[in-house]
Length: 159
Image (tube, rainbow, N blue to C red; front, side):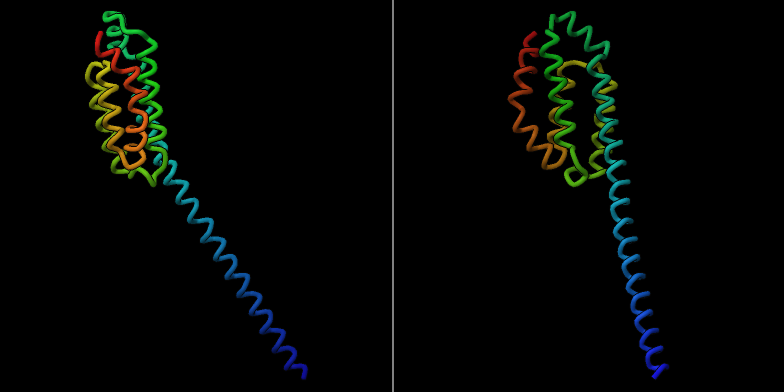
């Protein structure tokens, strides 16, 4: 009888031990997956911030300043158009589910090419159009807010 109780007791201990191992395994798997997603999100954010850095250079670019001064372009319109493009980066390329890493890489390359030419209001227009090609969210946002961008952009093209 003692050996039966001992055997039952050891089986219960084994079940408890295996349950603990199973729970710890599930917890470890659960933590591993989000950390991978978190690392992926950080890579995505780094690429997006690279694009924002290029756009920030445009806001204060010497070419743009010369253009605004020589053509009497109002800073209000320039800043409004620039803010709209900057907003499109944030809203059109907001999460990795909307834009692939490969698309972000192509976007960075395209923006670097734009950055090497003189920065004008047309640079912002090209950037807007390119961001509108960047995934479904980018298309939606670019289409929806194009009238706002045009309110700033169009008066600058008539200077």
